[in-house]
Image (cartoon, rainbow, N blue to C red; front, side, top):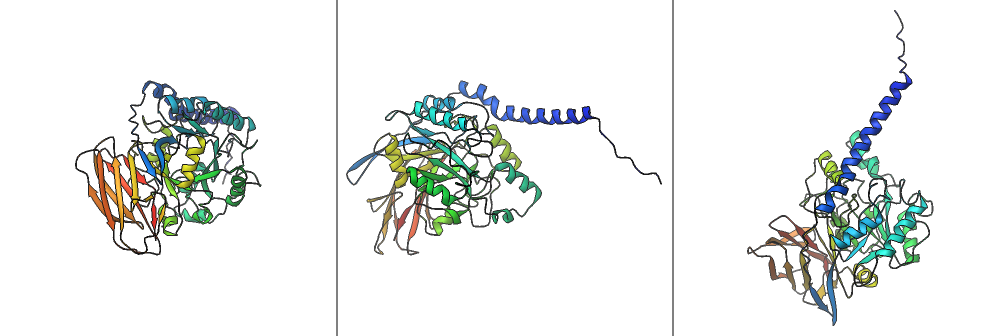
Length: 439
């Protein structure tokens, strides 16, 4: 029997195959990223700003809108556009009040080329102007890459095994309160910053905070709530272009959701943690607050994982005393925040008229009146009262954009209950108030 000879491919064939593969990858990235350079500038947004002022304990607060999660060409998975373009778009087109550029520290991100971090910091300082457009020095602490997660999903159905691996802590964005920033990012690739505990020590040094995002899954492994510290992480990004991580099975649930009851935003709430809600885009097309359409990469991922299209990028709403770094930062720490899918829906939620969303109330066992005010940019379809992870009440809209009522919460179910409000417009746009905790 004749022995089969191994085929030796000519070097030119191997080079041709490698070149073709590289060309296809390049074409994919051009479709996902470069096309927005042509598309977006010629499709300006029609932004309905929707302002609202409140008074609490004798102090006045204004409602401001911002983008706290987006990427430029300094990230390896968003290699078109510069930081200048990101900030300019947010200010001049999306009409944002505040923004932060959060390019990846790793892999192959800000930590790999120190000049990239300097470029990000310098651009942020140039665009920042108190009272006009607030810009925060920031970056993304990236524990567990998206490609690693995608390939693992293809190989194994039981994705939970990877969550036992201690290197996957989840993705967090880091924000500095002023102009001071380290010479190098505190990167997950560094032995000095490769765990949440080491990162928190760094945050303490600079008076900084971090914000976890897409905890339920999506493009990366789900968030590990065992390594969560509300002292340094006062709010959580529950919604972005990727989808909703509020709970399993909720509207616009994030694609590739990890459904084992351990990773949605309600998990730490049920465990007794206190934090507020925000939304932001996680845009990888270099346009802060871009409402025109989802980035092509996210549309591809939604199709790949058979996920549902999302109605908007996600925007953070905060009530601050003033439009300044100090004012916005204080509002984030105080949890006077809420999340919207894109439409700038006003939310004003209080318990017994004295405790604003993000706050705590000692009811002494008595019934609590929850006053709800919402004003959309389209007719409101419904208002939902969420209590301890369940739907306590649903109120239908009357066909108009404004909604005002008082819900009576008659009894305590736990030592400390949490209540938040979910508003939905007839066009599918949504808003989530930060919780109120009631003893």
